[in-house]
Length: 367
Image (tube, rainbow, N blue to C red):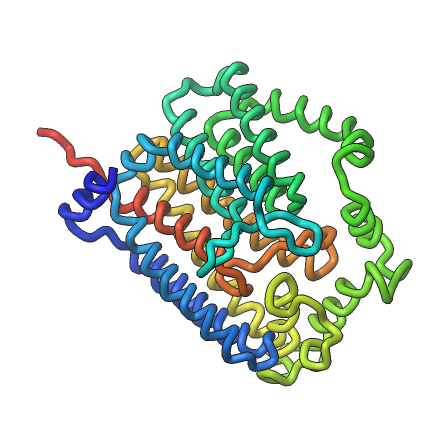
């Protein structure tokens, strides 16, 4: 397989300058924001810089193989990622009661970040040649696979990533031609099953987070502290912000998890509405570019993969922003290319490398 992979580089370089430049810009902005959010911790910033540099190289490397390489090997990649998650559950590094990481010595890998990429790619390869709308049998098989993986990640426990994996899998089903009738019936059954899910699938701390969403003031110094301080930080930024490294909520340690989940709150406090608009503008440009690439992809597999991975990116951004402004419960979701974290960062570089591969490889037309 390695020889086949290397041979794929001989046909030229495949590159999308719009995605590469915008993601590089976003990554550099992330380093600037992280330096402030970490209280000027140069060691944290340098470590993240290595991940950014390696990630950009990895994105370029992943973008070079032909999409057929990913289609033909999607099952293998998926099985390897499932195996890694199982190994993590059995022997993984436990932090704060959760087993989500494999200690590789030089790097701590969060294995669920890999499977959130391999699952949609495998589903795209499984469904790309199925008739429209996809049959009931293929729908059920796909759903069983999705919910198996979601539950595997949920019991780590990792509600945030399991939610993203669920959304990523459902996106592929929707883009592959899932019937609206099936969607309507499923939505109804899901609504009716909410009490059962509440009583049997959610941990006590997860239930508390949901209850806190509706009434943060019920426990302002406990479960409601994070979201309350986040709202104060965002609101106090005004139009132009308080200035770089001048945010009181972050630098006086009122705001928690400033380097990861709540880094957007730091950005809003220090750069204000104007800075937030610039950041969101780059995110929006990336999504528009992915939409354009999906519409012009060479075949259905490429369109499904680009659509699924770009919507996965959109969902992650949306969940993080919704979380820090108090629209949804706090679930522990980093902001792509901005928050600290090697596994999450590298997973999105891989995702966009695959997107570029799907978009830039065109089949030659035979005369």
